[in-house]
Length: 63
Image (tube, rainbow, N blue to C red; front, side, top):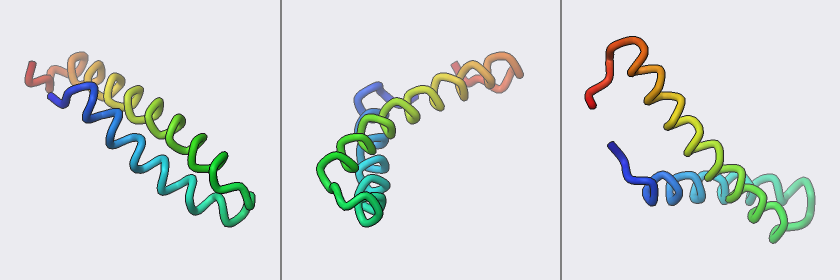
Protein backbone atom coordinates (compact mmCIF):
# COMPACT_ATOMS: atom_id res chain seq x y z
CA UNK A 1 0.00 0.00 0.00
CA UNK A 2 1.34 3.36 -0.97
CA UNK A 3 1.49 6.15 1.52
CA UNK A 4 -0.59 9.24 1.07
CA UNK A 5 2.52 11.36 0.52
CA UNK A 6 3.75 9.20 -2.36
CA UNK A 7 0.32 9.46 -4.00
CA UNK A 8 0.49 13.24 -3.74
CA UNK A 9 3.99 13.25 -5.21
CA UNK A 10 3.01 11.02 -8.13
CA UNK A 11 -0.10 13.07 -8.87
CA UNK A 12 1.75 16.36 -8.73
CA UNK A 13 4.47 15.19 -11.13
CA UNK A 14 1.99 13.88 -13.69
CA UNK A 15 -0.20 16.96 -13.28
CA UNK A 16 2.76 19.30 -13.72
CA UNK A 17 3.74 17.53 -16.94
CA UNK A 18 0.20 17.80 -18.28
CA UNK A 19 0.04 21.45 -17.26
CA UNK A 20 3.33 22.12 -19.01
CA UNK A 21 1.99 20.80 -22.30
CA UNK A 22 -1.32 22.63 -21.87
CA UNK A 23 0.68 25.84 -21.41
CA UNK A 24 1.59 25.73 -25.10
CA UNK A 25 -2.11 26.20 -25.86
CA UNK A 26 -3.08 28.61 -23.07
CA UNK A 27 0.14 30.67 -23.12
CA UNK A 28 0.08 30.84 -19.30
CA UNK A 29 2.70 28.52 -17.84
CA UNK A 30 2.27 29.26 -14.13
CA UNK A 31 -1.50 28.90 -14.14
CA UNK A 32 -1.47 25.77 -16.29
CA UNK A 33 1.14 23.98 -14.21
CA UNK A 34 -0.55 25.01 -10.94
CA UNK A 35 -3.93 23.74 -12.05
CA UNK A 36 -2.29 20.61 -13.43
CA UNK A 37 -0.65 19.86 -10.09
CA UNK A 38 -3.88 20.33 -8.13
CA UNK A 39 -5.95 18.26 -10.55
CA UNK A 40 -3.24 15.60 -10.74
CA UNK A 41 -3.13 15.19 -6.97
CA UNK A 42 -6.91 15.02 -6.62
CA UNK A 43 -7.29 12.51 -9.45
CA UNK A 44 -4.45 10.29 -8.19
CA UNK A 45 -5.80 10.14 -4.63
CA UNK A 46 -9.38 9.48 -5.80
CA UNK A 47 -8.29 6.77 -8.24
CA UNK A 48 -6.30 5.01 -5.50
CA UNK A 49 -9.28 5.18 -3.12
CA UNK A 50 -11.71 3.83 -5.72
CA UNK A 51 -9.24 1.10 -6.73
CA UNK A 52 -8.93 -0.05 -3.10
CA UNK A 53 -12.70 -0.10 -2.61
CA UNK A 54 -13.19 -2.05 -5.85
CA UNK A 55 -10.61 -4.63 -4.81
CA UNK A 56 -12.28 -4.99 -1.40
CA UNK A 57 -15.71 -5.51 -2.98
CA UNK A 58 -14.44 -8.08 -5.46
CA UNK A 59 -12.34 -9.95 -2.90
CA UNK A 60 -9.02 -9.13 -4.54
CA UNK A 61 -7.79 -6.98 -1.67
CA UNK A 62 -4.44 -7.81 -0.13
CA UNK A 63 -5.27 -5.92 3.08
